[in-house]
Image (cartoon, rainbow, N blue to C red; front, side, top):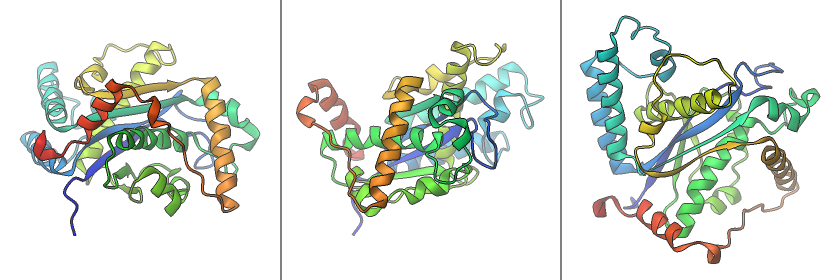
Length: 290
């Protein structure tokens, strides 16, 4: 029987995870994972309108890196055309998404946390794992506060080399503790909400990188503020101290899972503020009530 109140999250990454594809170093100073949450009915309407905007420009899909770097098919567009197009996409996002989340780590800090000599080990906890799991945890915490019963679907872009080991970490017990379906990976080119997630994480990570002077400034507009749409959510830059702690927690949790223990994150809902409860309940309200 189909459940009436289902939600889905779509996540993409920005940056290169050090240690994957036989690389001991990352090509980018930050790695981030981020995206949006909405009701499945809202995502259906989103896809219709998103596709309409793309068709108006004879495009099959959208990729933020190509747009931001003035690559084909955007190379010969003038400023007015570019701005009108990107704002049309942002309006579609803001019309339908309910919340956003982005978690990012500095790749050099990650290298320090894991020790560079271990970086190519197959069983290492990847930077991608940490950021992606924080996204799921943030949504699951809100769902728990709201007492949302249906399992949330999490869809990731399948381009990450760290995806296979991340996916395999979700045992039935872990999925139960998060109240989620098995996370899946799909192609950005086939799934419009993943293209929206790509926009968000690309721009937030770029904003972090510029603010921390990790990349040279460029005379190009940032859309990170526009892309949060005035909605509730979180963008978090995980510093070196927190990263070390998170990394050790992930290592310990993996070791316990391998030994057959049921590892769950315990949340004290008694400490939830009234404001947090209201936000969570509104976030997971049925689509017909919105």
